[in-house]
Figure 1 (tube, rainbow, N blue to C red):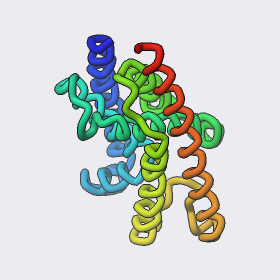
Figure 2: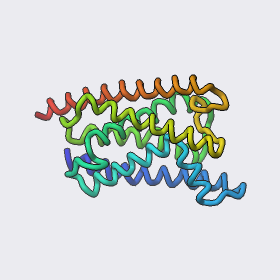
Figure 3: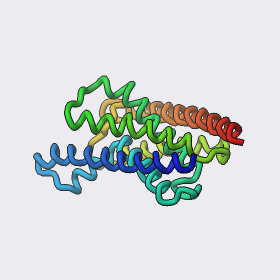
Figure 4: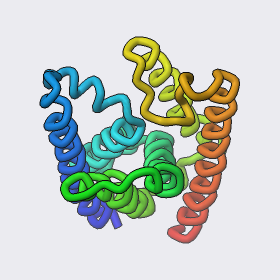
Length: 209
């Protein structure tokens, strides 16, 4: 089990890096044509919840490869819970709410499949293979902090440069009351998803014992 988790983590880390690198290259090709610098592109790159979350899970993957026996830091059970909850919501929200709004082609399609589908699927497998039994129900609240932190981060950034990547968190098209309701809804969805995953984790722990 430990060897399988490490193998999945190694592949996931490589795929995560490939997806992030490809997405950055595509964004750079688009923005640099209008005079943007590499730092401008990086600033825009890390406005997206998807790319921030993919970066988080790629780091979790990488640390699990380097320290397969560690259950601390990025590989602490509650951090891995936050990561798996977040990356699964990236997959679900994108495919339900955002994918119908555009039709990427070529390399962009490949990048989208990697960051929205392939990495989430691999991380779910990795998480299932990891040691279980260390999660408490209260850790679901910790997992829900990721979207709350992103909401504050995204709105603060948008106030500086006027760019809001997601329509449900865009004060130019929705009131702050509506945005607050959307963010609360996301938090509750994360909380529910994390509670479900904790239940699965406990079931896996009982099965192994």
